[in-house]
View: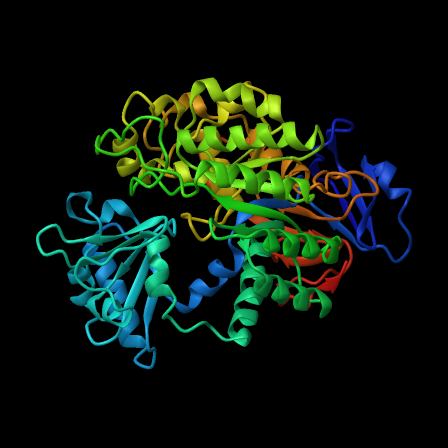
Length: 555
């Protein structure tokens, strides 16, 4: 397959731009001018005329919860709901349409939807689902909302306590569970919800891979996976259905034992291929700012009685990080509050001291706040800043901003400050804990920090915007580096894997506020067309229909 007459951003230093590219098998065979690539063509070569369209390396979503997102299609989708009334309307409609469902489940509600920015209450849910248990998670997955029936099934009654990182929120007047469950306390209800069948999980993954292909995503790094989910990806790969290069990080919680680290190491040895890898472990160090469970250096501005707390005892966390690093596992750390970020950096510094200097490629995930004194430590320790631009979407940061307060706001989602301090930026969606899985939406917000409607006019904390090229690298080349795969993907160079996306607009030649209107026109993964719009010119026949996930046509 040859792509000609394109604007090909290679992501490489030399050449940074090309107009034609040839693919042979699953590799890039030639990159250069039309004339240079034409010399490698044969009589049976399929040629696609791009008509000047922009070509990029395939997008790499470096932090995603893919199976969880895939299964959302079977649940109530509350993403985008603006009020409690709209949330209740969606839940009621879903319950009516699914009378056979033993539970009503879903996710996506935002903290600002409830009156006075309070947490949701069981009465709010009882009003629309009373005779069946119902459980709905916040968009970020860190707070759950149960109705009375679900609380009864879980055996949660007056003055209930949770022994772990999290909280059963109680009504201050009655002492009864209010219906809100923070962090790990959600497990008390979630453990009672029937698990989807393996067949349903398989089908959900196939459909989610179609969605990813339609957005130009060719690689994912799955955060907080488990051996069961890894087994699903293994089956997809063995049967030729895996159309995403997938890296899986196992989840580490305070209950994680040394035997678990040994298991994670064995999974790394088993899964090291170009399609499926398992060599990382992700630690959950704190919660989220909106519910005051993120660990902060100073008290919350809207709740001065607390500054949050880490999920781990610092000593246990430091020891387990060092143990995982010594076992040859890459370590991710979820750290949203500035105190959690500092604790993660401290643990990484200690691990390097104990285990000796090596190419660890430690990662801190999210970094929604950071102390200025900690900015240079990322580069000094070789720690990657793995962040989600869509989390800073200006239309959804009201509750967040009030909790952080004006003094800390300049370092809100501090992409530019981290970049200037020498940190490697790696971008992702955190789907489904986000408004959108679309990398284009993330790029739009990274460059503008304004909504798709252009608000606010000057941008939200605009000093933290980054350039278009920085955003593209964070979604492509840096993502490959983050999974130790920069030698085979992430740039469009001869000999590398043929993973790329063709876009409907040239991001370099449009108004940055129009970036969000851009779509994927063609997605190629492993040399195969996995998604194609019908409006691309072609000199010889190329399948125009969107192939079913796992049944792509050879390129």
